[in-house]
Length: 334
Image (tube, rainbow, N blue to C red; front, side, top):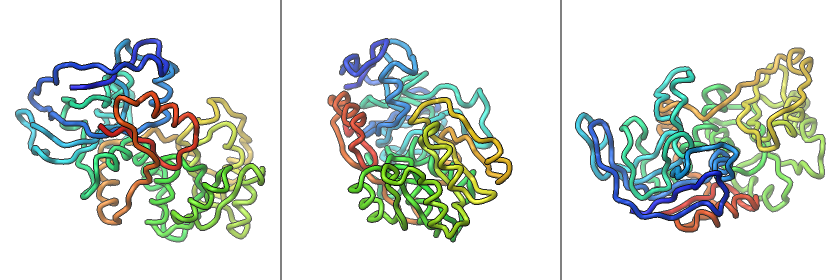
């Protein structure tokens, strides 16, 4: 089988295509022919060596493909099932603990840049009905993050106003989940072309944050001065103050990303005087993913895929990801 290994200390030049024997199936495991993976900010940090990992690590947290064989004791899956990986294989449900958040594929254990993998059955869920492997591979990180932030933590409901930032995978999933719930969506971008695309995908109002620096206040104005009910906050330090400004009293911010850095100054009075709730979201559990898949099956939602690259062009895929030209997910297709 073909696979990618990342030589320490990281860097796109240290991604190496290799050929090895497929893994052996053990009790409780499934052997999966991986057909696709998708790129995430977490993977990018691993690639650059900003999240250190073992020399020779197989990267990529997201993987989807078909089950080839099942080990003794596995009755949830059968050969031919289309499955998608979970980000935290040991976080099956409930609240997270340090123990269940260990063993992240592509980080602390080998990931899915490999044509075949053997993993415990609970490391996968079934993919949505009718999804291709590429479509399914977008769900593990971006889809579940948006679902947990907006639906599980936010309890979004019909008539709510939701603010999303940018056009990355999490933001576009949040747009789609919000619309499926009957919410109104305000979206931001610095690109007029991307703002038009956002409207095409269902955004009710759009704001160019370069031409409108106080976009938080603008979002509030677009709700008649009430403020938005939810913000899916992917930026972090450079955007959090504006997200707070956009919120209604009692609003919710799902803090899911740190695209602009790791440390921010926050106006504490703005939070407590307006009773704004901030939820730190780190992907989600297997149960969250299963709930999301059921919702996708009911709604017919399809992910937004920008571009696909073959496995051997993983370096080019990450270079394209770095360019920030994409609208939606960048994927590897094996």
